[in-house]
Image (tube, rainbow, N blue to C red):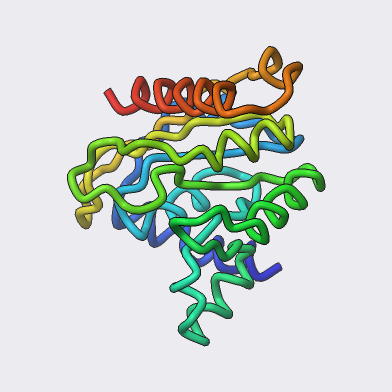
Length: 192
């Protein structure tokens, strides 16, 4: 309920301020488990994506955001999953797998931090590992432009990526690297 309430308030504000041009919304699956991943250019990215797609997204968020009691309570209420950056946070991985097992949408910024230049950074293997374990649909979302009031920003939703051939094999570093690379290439094509 809190997510729907917050979205109802934030959606008109985000659309008024940033006038998003949305491409590929028809690619967004209306049911089933999904890993939605995006480039990360601003703290507003999860808010914008959450205002665009019609299902609740359970985003992974850095642990530091939860240290502020008020902000922590708000983002926890929105379904955010705390993660310790720079390490294999098993608790965050288990939480994300639970979200996916329930047929929900898990959101992640695989670069691990915001890009100061806007250029796509290297993906951590965590996203590929979660994808392999969950066998969820993978959905790339590209955010193009800058967050400037009353100037339009573009959000491109790509087609879901099928990794069924990798899901047949046992997880190993080589497979995870291939998956992460394919995810990176799919997102780069949306950012052109």
